[in-house]
Amino acid sequence: MKNFVVVIRISLFLISVWMFMLPITAICGDEASFTQKDREMLIRIDERLNQIDKRFEQIDKRFEQVDKRFEQVDKRFAELREDMNKRFESFQAIMLGIVATFGALVAAIIGFALWDRRTMIRPFETRIREIEAVLVDEQDVIENKRNISRLIEAMQKLARHDSRIAEVLRSVSLL
Image 1 (cartoon, rainbow, N blue to C red):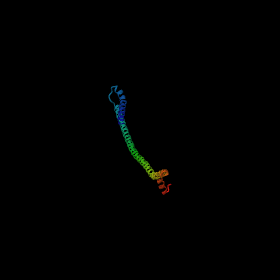
Image 2: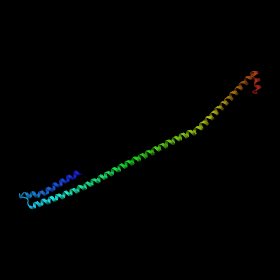
Image 3: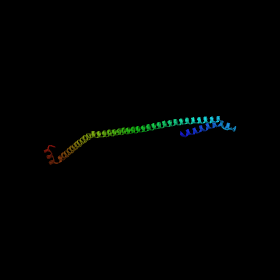
Image 4: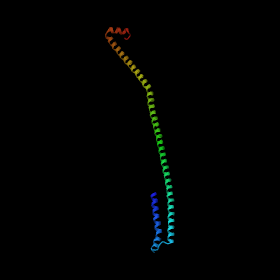
């Protein structure tokens, strides 16, 4: 920005010098010496150049003020960017906490459901085992009764042919 101002300033200076030197070269073409009129014209040219320099200084000051304003705006943008980054980081931390909490709750609920299911099923499993044991015992008793009744039948058949066995069976009322 400053280089641009310097280039403009030098360009304007050269143009103004050329414009003011053009009439002087025309006058000097007559090979006359400087007159009072020429001196006054040079003084006016010098005054105008001084005025142009003052204007350029004012323009330089304005450009400096604009540069300062741009720097302030850049600082504000940088501060806003930092603030936004901090907010996003805190938001990200909050979201991570929410996701972790949700995951922990899901794991706890699943664990509770499995524990509850097992504790509910255990009494039924023990009761079923007890019933199976009783049924097995009853089946053994039924099987034993069948075996005993077969044994009695076999003894009764033997008693038909053997009188001693028939007497023993009559004494216990099996015949």
